[in-house]
Image (cartoon, rainbow, N blue to C red):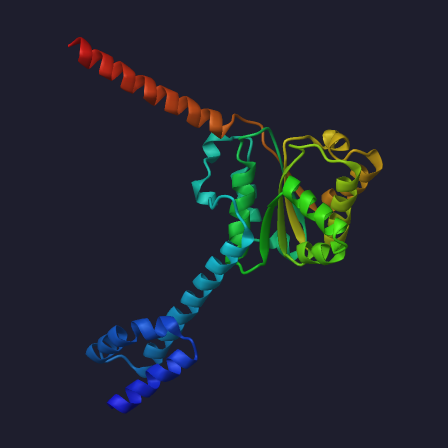
Length: 265
């Protein structure tokens, strides 16, 4: 290959924004010549690596835009600590088939049992599958909708939240909601109903959602749409935070005992 042709090749790769190919080109061409690889094998490897790189970049970009408070995967979740959770059911949800059918997921359980971890982990899987994904705390969501309503741009805000293929609404019920907030929440759920998937987490049972949404009729209308096509996962177990706190205190006490013993010697 002449120097002129090689430079033109690099210019074209740059023009096409094939950054990964530009990075691996020199080393791979040396290997191809050394191993006497045919042109089809060379092209197959180069394009496969370029496609992989673009998928990774798209994933990282999606994750940055999704607003996740944590980036924990399913592999990091300790299913042995929460035996009430069916691991196979979570793995089935991770296939994203529920997304294809615009179905919802609700994680119920007391604080600290892993609801946000599981919701976010599924959100990361959705992002990896190139579904537009967004995480938001329920209180923050209501405040944003109220602000948009006050500024006469509620429909624009609802349209933005409705366009995500997966919306994660975390911590429903942790803070009280007035009648306006409940109405705004209903409008969003109604717009997404049977069109896109939503993951909800809550520390309240469904029988307590009347208290969350201030009015029985609104609560019933919300539950009707949330649960129509939905997988409900009720987590009954100990708090991970308390577990970590106990482990920390145990380690701290061990250090204190060790220092005391050394001082006694």
